[in-house]
Length: 284
Ligand SMILES: C[S@@+](CC[C@H](N)C(=O)[O-])C[C@H]1O[C@@H](n2cnc3c(N)ncnc32)[C@H](O)[C@@H]1O
Image 1 (cartoon, rainbow, N blue to C red):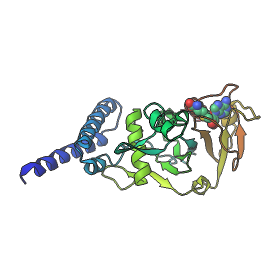
Image 2 (cartoon, protein in one colour; image 1 turned 120 degrees about the horizontal axis):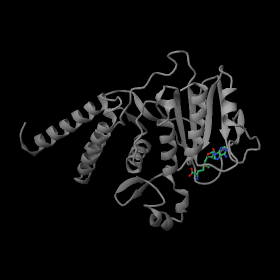
Image 3 (cartoon, protein in one colour; image 1 turned 180 degrees about the horizontal axis):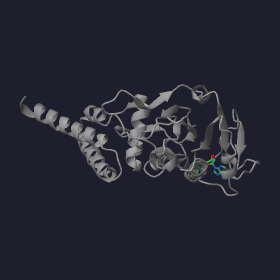
Image 4 (cartoon, rainbow, N blue to C red; image 1 turned 180 degrees about the vertical axis):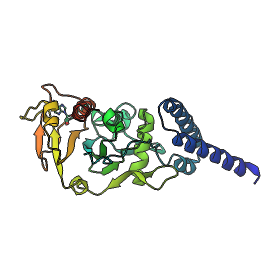
Protein backbone atom coordinates (compact mmCIF):
# COMPACT_ATOMS: atom_id res chain seq x y z
CA UNK A 1 0.00 0.00 0.00
CA UNK A 2 1.26 3.55 -0.68
CA UNK A 3 0.10 7.12 -0.36
CA UNK A 4 -1.30 9.05 2.61
CA UNK A 5 -3.98 6.43 3.39
CA UNK A 6 -1.36 3.70 3.78
CA UNK A 7 0.71 5.86 6.13
CA UNK A 8 -2.39 6.57 8.22
CA UNK A 9 -3.33 2.86 8.26
CA UNK A 10 0.20 1.84 9.38
CA UNK A 11 0.15 4.50 12.10
CA UNK A 12 -3.19 3.18 13.35
CA UNK A 13 -2.00 -0.43 13.38
CA UNK A 14 1.07 0.66 15.34
CA UNK A 15 -1.07 2.43 17.94
CA UNK A 16 -3.45 -0.52 18.15
CA UNK A 17 -0.55 -2.94 18.67
CA UNK A 18 0.92 -0.67 21.34
CA UNK A 19 -2.41 -0.57 23.17
CA UNK A 20 -2.79 -4.35 22.97
CA UNK A 21 0.75 -4.82 24.32
CA UNK A 22 -0.10 -2.40 27.07
CA UNK A 23 -3.17 -4.38 28.02
CA UNK A 24 -1.28 -7.66 27.99
CA UNK A 25 1.09 -6.59 30.80
CA UNK A 26 -0.91 -6.01 33.90
CA UNK A 27 1.18 -6.90 36.91
CA UNK A 28 2.75 -4.77 39.69
CA UNK A 29 5.71 -2.67 38.53
CA UNK A 30 4.51 -2.64 34.95
CA UNK A 31 1.41 -0.72 35.94
CA UNK A 32 3.09 2.69 36.01
CA UNK A 33 4.67 2.14 32.64
CA UNK A 34 1.30 0.97 31.40
CA UNK A 35 -0.35 4.17 32.62
CA UNK A 36 2.24 6.15 30.68
CA UNK A 37 1.60 4.17 27.53
CA UNK A 38 -2.12 4.64 27.98
CA UNK A 39 -1.55 8.38 28.37
CA UNK A 40 0.42 8.43 25.13
CA UNK A 41 -2.25 6.38 23.47
CA UNK A 42 -4.93 8.74 24.68
CA UNK A 43 -2.93 11.76 23.50
CA UNK A 44 -2.48 10.15 20.10
CA UNK A 45 -6.19 9.50 19.89
CA UNK A 46 -6.97 13.07 20.93
CA UNK A 47 -4.65 14.38 18.21
CA UNK A 48 -6.32 12.17 15.71
CA UNK A 49 -9.72 13.42 16.83
CA UNK A 50 -8.52 16.98 16.30
CA UNK A 51 -7.63 16.01 12.75
CA UNK A 52 -11.29 15.36 12.19
CA UNK A 53 -10.92 11.55 11.97
CA UNK A 54 -13.36 11.09 14.84
CA UNK A 55 -14.85 7.80 13.82
CA UNK A 56 -11.50 6.07 13.52
CA UNK A 57 -10.43 7.49 16.86
CA UNK A 58 -13.56 6.18 18.56
CA UNK A 59 -12.77 2.69 17.28
CA UNK A 60 -9.28 2.83 18.72
CA UNK A 61 -10.39 3.76 22.20
CA UNK A 62 -13.31 1.38 21.91
CA UNK A 63 -12.55 -0.42 25.11
CA UNK A 64 -11.11 0.47 28.44
CA UNK A 65 -8.06 -1.46 29.61
CA UNK A 66 -8.73 -4.58 31.60
CA UNK A 67 -6.75 -5.80 34.60
CA UNK A 68 -6.05 -9.38 35.63
CA UNK A 69 -7.72 -10.06 38.96
CA UNK A 70 -8.51 -13.23 40.89
CA UNK A 71 -11.91 -14.43 39.84
CA UNK A 72 -14.49 -13.94 42.52
CA UNK A 73 -16.24 -17.07 43.65
CA UNK A 74 -13.35 -19.36 42.77
CA UNK A 75 -13.21 -20.51 46.41
CA UNK A 76 -16.97 -20.28 46.86
CA UNK A 77 -16.40 -16.86 48.39
CA UNK A 78 -19.20 -14.34 48.36
CA UNK A 79 -18.67 -11.26 46.25
CA UNK A 80 -19.98 -7.80 46.96
CA UNK A 81 -22.12 -5.64 44.70
CA UNK A 82 -22.34 -1.85 44.64
CA UNK A 83 -25.21 0.17 43.26
CA UNK A 84 -24.41 3.85 42.79
CA UNK A 85 -27.61 5.87 42.53
CA UNK A 86 -28.45 9.19 40.82
CA UNK A 87 -25.03 9.70 39.25
CA UNK A 88 -24.61 13.08 37.54
CA UNK A 89 -23.78 11.84 34.06
CA UNK A 90 -25.46 13.70 31.26
CA UNK A 91 -24.23 14.13 27.72
CA UNK A 92 -24.69 17.54 26.09
CA UNK A 93 -23.72 18.87 22.67
CA UNK A 94 -21.25 21.63 23.41
CA UNK A 95 -20.19 23.26 20.14
CA UNK A 96 -19.55 20.40 17.76
CA UNK A 97 -18.82 17.77 20.39
CA UNK A 98 -20.83 15.63 22.76
CA UNK A 99 -19.48 15.95 26.29
CA UNK A 100 -20.37 14.92 29.83
CA UNK A 101 -21.67 18.15 31.34
CA UNK A 102 -19.90 19.47 34.42
CA UNK A 103 -20.18 22.58 36.56
CA UNK A 104 -16.59 23.75 35.93
CA UNK A 105 -16.38 23.60 32.16
CA UNK A 106 -20.00 24.12 31.12
CA UNK A 107 -21.47 26.64 33.57
CA UNK A 108 -22.36 29.22 30.87
CA UNK A 109 -23.83 26.53 28.63
CA UNK A 110 -25.92 25.21 31.54
CA UNK A 111 -27.08 28.65 32.70
CA UNK A 112 -28.19 29.54 29.17
CA UNK A 113 -30.43 26.47 29.34
CA UNK A 114 -31.77 27.54 32.76
CA UNK A 115 -30.08 24.61 34.45
CA UNK A 116 -28.24 24.83 37.74
CA UNK A 117 -24.50 24.15 37.19
CA UNK A 118 -24.23 22.95 40.82
CA UNK A 119 -26.25 19.85 39.87
CA UNK A 120 -23.69 18.76 37.26
CA UNK A 121 -21.01 16.94 39.27
CA UNK A 122 -19.70 13.90 37.36
CA UNK A 123 -16.57 14.11 39.54
CA UNK A 124 -18.62 12.50 42.36
CA UNK A 125 -19.22 9.26 40.45
CA UNK A 126 -15.62 9.28 39.17
CA UNK A 127 -14.23 9.51 42.71
CA UNK A 128 -16.74 6.92 43.92
CA UNK A 129 -15.71 4.43 41.23
CA UNK A 130 -12.01 4.97 41.94
CA UNK A 131 -12.69 4.25 45.62
CA UNK A 132 -14.23 0.90 44.65
CA UNK A 133 -11.82 -0.11 41.88
CA UNK A 134 -8.66 0.91 43.78
CA UNK A 135 -9.65 -0.96 46.94
CA UNK A 136 -7.77 -4.07 48.15
CA UNK A 137 -11.24 -5.68 48.25
CA UNK A 138 -11.53 -5.37 44.47
CA UNK A 139 -7.90 -6.39 43.94
CA UNK A 140 -8.58 -9.53 45.98
CA UNK A 141 -11.36 -10.46 43.54
CA UNK A 142 -14.27 -9.84 45.90
CA UNK A 143 -16.03 -7.31 43.67
CA UNK A 144 -18.90 -9.05 41.92
CA UNK A 145 -20.49 -6.17 40.03
CA UNK A 146 -21.01 -2.42 40.00
CA UNK A 147 -24.23 -0.87 38.77
CA UNK A 148 -24.60 2.84 38.14
CA UNK A 149 -27.91 4.59 37.64
CA UNK A 150 -27.78 8.13 36.32
CA UNK A 151 -30.01 10.95 37.52
CA UNK A 152 -31.98 10.47 34.26
CA UNK A 153 -32.51 6.77 35.08
CA UNK A 154 -30.01 5.18 32.66
CA UNK A 155 -28.69 1.99 34.25
CA UNK A 156 -25.33 0.47 33.34
CA UNK A 157 -23.10 -2.30 34.60
CA UNK A 158 -19.32 -2.08 34.99
CA UNK A 159 -17.37 -5.35 35.03
CA UNK A 160 -15.00 -5.80 38.01
CA UNK A 161 -11.84 -6.12 35.90
CA UNK A 162 -12.16 -2.74 34.17
CA UNK A 163 -9.30 -0.36 34.76
CA UNK A 164 -11.08 2.86 35.64
CA UNK A 165 -9.60 5.93 33.91
CA UNK A 166 -7.66 7.87 36.54
CA UNK A 167 -8.05 11.32 35.07
CA UNK A 168 -11.37 13.10 35.03
CA UNK A 169 -11.03 14.01 31.36
CA UNK A 170 -10.51 10.42 30.30
CA UNK A 171 -13.30 9.24 32.59
CA UNK A 172 -15.72 11.71 30.96
CA UNK A 173 -14.56 10.54 27.53
CA UNK A 174 -15.37 6.94 28.45
CA UNK A 175 -18.76 7.82 29.96
CA UNK A 176 -19.70 9.95 26.97
CA UNK A 177 -18.81 7.08 24.65
CA UNK A 178 -20.81 4.63 26.79
CA UNK A 179 -23.94 6.78 26.95
CA UNK A 180 -23.91 7.28 23.19
CA UNK A 181 -22.91 3.78 22.06
CA UNK A 182 -24.62 1.95 24.98
CA UNK A 183 -21.73 -0.47 25.47
CA UNK A 184 -17.95 -0.52 25.54
CA UNK A 185 -16.05 -3.64 24.57
CA UNK A 186 -12.52 -4.48 25.70
CA UNK A 187 -9.90 -4.07 23.00
CA UNK A 188 -9.29 -7.39 21.26
CA UNK A 189 -12.10 -9.10 23.18
CA UNK A 190 -15.81 -9.55 22.76
CA UNK A 191 -16.83 -9.02 26.36
CA UNK A 192 -18.78 -5.88 27.11
CA UNK A 193 -16.89 -4.17 29.91
CA UNK A 194 -19.45 -1.41 30.37
CA UNK A 195 -22.98 -2.00 29.26
CA UNK A 196 -26.25 -0.08 29.44
CA UNK A 197 -28.91 -2.47 30.73
CA UNK A 198 -32.64 -2.44 31.42
CA UNK A 199 -34.11 -1.11 34.65
CA UNK A 200 -34.79 -2.02 37.36
CA UNK A 201 -31.48 -3.01 38.91
CA UNK A 202 -33.26 -5.66 41.04
CA UNK A 203 -33.65 -7.80 37.88
CA UNK A 204 -29.86 -8.09 37.68
CA UNK A 205 -29.16 -8.89 41.33
CA UNK A 206 -28.74 -12.44 42.64
CA UNK A 207 -31.71 -13.96 44.47
CA UNK A 208 -29.75 -14.12 47.71
CA UNK A 209 -29.10 -10.34 47.67
CA UNK A 210 -29.37 -8.30 50.83
CA UNK A 211 -29.77 -4.68 49.78
CA UNK A 212 -28.33 -2.16 52.21
CA UNK A 213 -29.02 1.50 51.49
CA UNK A 214 -26.76 4.11 53.04
CA UNK A 215 -27.88 7.55 54.06
CA UNK A 216 -26.84 10.17 56.56
CA UNK A 217 -30.51 10.78 57.27
CA UNK A 218 -31.31 7.21 58.31
CA UNK A 219 -32.46 6.81 61.90
CA UNK A 220 -30.72 3.45 62.17
CA UNK A 221 -27.14 4.19 63.04
CA UNK A 222 -24.71 1.26 62.81
CA UNK A 223 -21.07 0.53 63.42
CA UNK A 224 -20.19 -0.50 59.89
CA UNK A 225 -17.45 -2.99 60.81
CA UNK A 226 -19.73 -4.83 63.29
CA UNK A 227 -22.62 -4.66 60.83
CA UNK A 228 -20.56 -6.22 58.02
CA UNK A 229 -18.82 -8.79 60.22
CA UNK A 230 -22.18 -9.99 61.57
CA UNK A 231 -23.85 -10.11 58.16
CA UNK A 232 -24.88 -13.62 57.13
CA UNK A 233 -22.51 -15.47 54.80
CA UNK A 234 -25.57 -16.86 53.03
CA UNK A 235 -26.47 -13.61 51.32
CA UNK A 236 -24.73 -11.42 48.77
CA UNK A 237 -24.28 -7.94 50.17
CA UNK A 238 -25.45 -5.15 47.88
CA UNK A 239 -24.55 -1.65 49.02
CA UNK A 240 -26.62 1.20 47.61
CA UNK A 241 -24.87 4.58 47.82
CA UNK A 242 -25.83 7.95 46.34
CA UNK A 243 -23.58 9.60 43.74
CA UNK A 244 -25.56 12.84 43.39
CA UNK A 245 -24.64 16.37 44.41
CA UNK A 246 -27.75 16.86 46.58
CA UNK A 247 -30.52 14.70 47.97
CA UNK A 248 -30.72 11.11 49.10
CA UNK A 249 -31.28 7.63 47.70
CA UNK A 250 -34.77 6.11 47.47
CA UNK A 251 -35.68 3.82 50.35
CA UNK A 252 -37.78 1.47 48.22
CA UNK A 253 -36.66 -2.11 47.62
CA UNK A 254 -34.06 -2.02 50.37
CA UNK A 255 -33.65 -4.61 53.13
CA UNK A 256 -31.85 -2.16 55.35
CA UNK A 257 -31.38 1.60 55.47
CA UNK A 258 -28.50 2.70 57.66
CA UNK A 259 -26.35 5.62 58.68
CA UNK A 260 -22.66 4.85 59.26
CA UNK A 261 -21.41 8.17 60.64
CA UNK A 262 -22.87 11.18 62.42
CA UNK A 263 -21.42 13.43 59.69
CA UNK A 264 -22.52 13.53 56.06
CA UNK A 265 -19.84 11.83 53.96
CA UNK A 266 -18.88 12.06 50.32
CA UNK A 267 -19.80 9.03 48.27
CA UNK A 268 -16.09 8.14 47.90
CA UNK A 269 -15.49 8.33 51.65
CA UNK A 270 -18.56 6.21 52.31
CA UNK A 271 -17.38 3.57 49.79
CA UNK A 272 -13.85 3.59 51.27
CA UNK A 273 -15.42 2.75 54.63
CA UNK A 274 -17.53 -0.06 53.19
CA UNK A 275 -14.55 -1.60 51.37
CA UNK A 276 -12.37 -1.30 54.44
CA UNK A 277 -15.01 -2.98 56.67
CA UNK A 278 -15.32 -5.86 54.18
CA UNK A 279 -11.54 -6.18 53.98
CA UNK A 280 -11.49 -6.64 57.76
CA UNK A 281 -14.26 -9.23 57.55
CA UNK A 282 -12.43 -11.20 54.86
CA UNK A 283 -8.90 -10.69 56.28
CA UNK A 284 -7.72 -8.93 53.15
C1 LIG B 1 -25.51 12.29 48.56
S1 LIG B 1 -23.98 11.73 48.16
C2 LIG B 1 -23.28 13.23 48.57
C3 LIG B 1 -22.37 13.58 47.52
C4 LIG B 1 -21.37 14.54 47.99
N1 LIG B 1 -21.80 15.87 47.71
C5 LIG B 1 -20.06 14.17 47.34
O1 LIG B 1 -19.29 15.04 46.94
O2 LIG B 1 -19.76 12.97 47.25
C6 LIG B 1 -23.16 10.73 49.37
C7 LIG B 1 -23.76 9.39 49.62
O3 LIG B 1 -22.97 8.74 50.59
C8 LIG B 1 -23.80 8.09 51.54
N2 LIG B 1 -23.58 8.73 52.84
C9 LIG B 1 -23.07 9.94 53.10
N3 LIG B 1 -22.98 10.17 54.41
C10 LIG B 1 -23.46 9.06 55.03
C11 LIG B 1 -23.63 8.67 56.38
N4 LIG B 1 -23.29 9.46 57.38
N5 LIG B 1 -24.15 7.44 56.63
C12 LIG B 1 -24.48 6.61 55.61
N6 LIG B 1 -24.34 6.94 54.33
C13 LIG B 1 -23.84 8.14 54.02
C14 LIG B 1 -25.21 8.20 51.06
O4 LIG B 1 -25.54 7.07 50.29
C15 LIG B 1 -25.16 9.45 50.19
O5 LIG B 1 -26.16 9.41 49.21
